[in-house]
Image: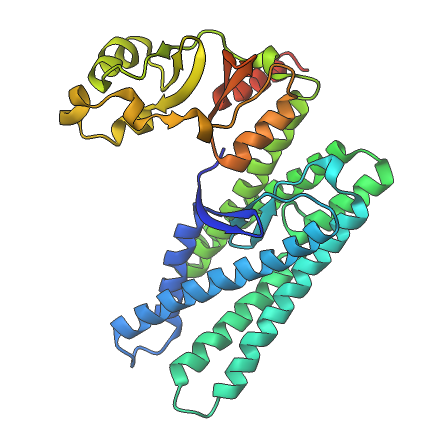
Length: 370
C-alpha cells in the first residue's frame, strides 16, 4: 500500500493525503516564486507560495467532500479517500456502485472544480484594482489551476474523472467491471508514461527545465495513482472466495504482558525477526504490541517497561473471525490503516492475518496464473 498521511475524517469518511503532495507543495512554491515579479522580496513570494499550497489543498479537499457527500447520499459506502493532486480516489467496492452512479460522481467532481474555480475568480474580480495586488494574483492563479484540473481530469485514464467515465461506459457495454477497470487503468498508466517522456524531451531538446520537470511530475503522479488502484483491484480479485482461516498464520509469537521490552527484543524480535506480537493471558487476547510500539520507548527504558504498558489493548483492536471473507478483511485493514488482525474463535486467538500475508497470497496466485 502506498504511503499516505491522515487528514482526519468528515462525516465518518477518512481523507488521507498521498505522499506525492509533498512534492507538489515544493513545486507550487517554486512556481509562485517564478511567476510573481522579482520586485517582490523572496520571503514574500515564498510566503505566498505556502498560502497557495494551503488554499490549493483546501480546494481539492472541498471538491472531494462534495463528491463523497453525493456518493454517501446515493447509498455508496465511502470510508476512505486517498487525496492526490488531481483529486481523490475513494475506496468503493464493485458491488456498492454502478455505471450510472460512476458517471454521476465523475460529473460532480468536474462540476465541483468549476464552481471552486468560479469562486476564486469571483474573489479575484473583487480584489482587482485594489491595493491587494498579491492576494488578487494568488486567487487568480488558483482559479486558473482549478480550470486546468478540469481539463486534465477529462483525460480518459483511470483514476481521472475521464477515466471513471470511460470505465462506466465500458462496464455498461460489457457487463464486466474488472475488464473495464483493467483497460482504463492501463490507459491511465500509459498516459502517465507519455507525460514523463514529454517532460524529459522538453528538458533535453528545449531546455525548459521547470515545464519539463512539471510534466514529469504529473506523469509520475498519474502512473503511480493508476498503479495503486490496479494493485488493489488485483488483490480484491485474488481474495474472492477466500476467508480469514485460509490465509491466517498459526505461527505467531505469543507473549505475556509482564514481559519487559528488553526481554521481548532479545528473546523474540532479534531471534524471529517478527514485527508484531500477540499478547495473551490463558489463551485470551489481551492486546498486540508492534515494533513501532517498541521503538516509541527510549532504549534505556526497555528493561523497566512492560509489554502491557505499551501494547494496543484488545478493546481497541479490530479482530476477525475464521469465516470472514478476505475482501472484507482487506477493507477493514484499509479503513483503520492497520497491518495485522487477530483471528478469534470462542474468544481465543486462533491465528493472525497480516497485510503481508494478503500480498503474498495474491503474488502466489498470480504466478500460477489464477
